[in-house]
Length: 381
Image 1 (cartoon, rainbow, N blue to C red):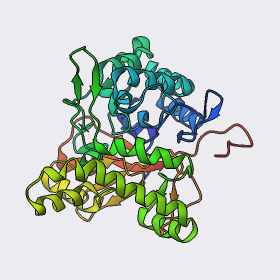
Image 2: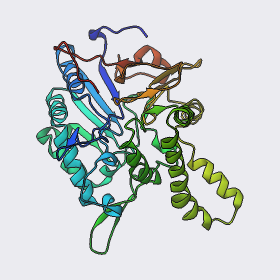
Image 3: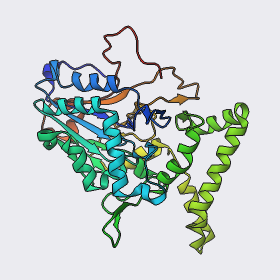
Image 4: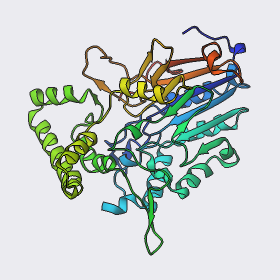
């Protein structure tokens, strides 16, 4: 898409997702193998760049499209089993994450302090515990008087920043990760609150995190089928253990405790296939979305960590903003040695326009943040 002169636009919308800030590289003197985010300096530069210089007096809306923080990847907390999902545990995990990435939060605070800057935070499946009001308040309190410039609400699952553009995290398309943001907290008779996670969150904490201690790349390889084939050939014993653990977990957690109560065998198998349908074909989902939302021209999602930009013949656009974590793609057609820090950039040239004139007034693209490095080296991950 053609570049835009700074003087031509009225508003800039930036969309990032799946950064997965966790509890830091070390915890209590031990290396934290569950920490996936290692680009604090690059993210600080990103926030500084879009709040100063040519963008200092420009309206900039930063949309954090889910999984900015990763409550599922915080180890060594003194909460076990179901206590891990308590409000008390969630607050402890939030504080660990914030302390581990203070530089990023300070940069976000500076961003919010600048004129015409705001943040919209969409809750994903890895930061789902933000459904607790106490966590929202704890997080927002860090930003002091500028907390008014952040929108963080359970009611936002789809965000429409301008006419024709829809932003969703994407977990709601997979049964393993979908949850009701408005009704996912229960309270005991003693007044203690607990989050009811989707079964996919249990899977991450009980299976993925366990095997990630042995192979740090376990959740970073795509496509999954290539990972299984490659693993059976070159890392046989580990891969077989991982596969068997997956089958055992699914059988005990989903099939035995849930599907055995169903009377219809057909219903059982239909639900099983839906449960196992991870990282769905977004080509099909996109067409279904635009068929149901005729006034939409752009759909932006995250969740799968697979950056992509597709422009269809009818002019509609699909973007997956990818991730800022290390990924390994075994598909030779998509192989890259780089850790690509991708984000969507939306240039709005007029505040008021008809949807028929969308292409004349809005430009959408997927960008790769290169960073601003004043040193002749960068950190090796």
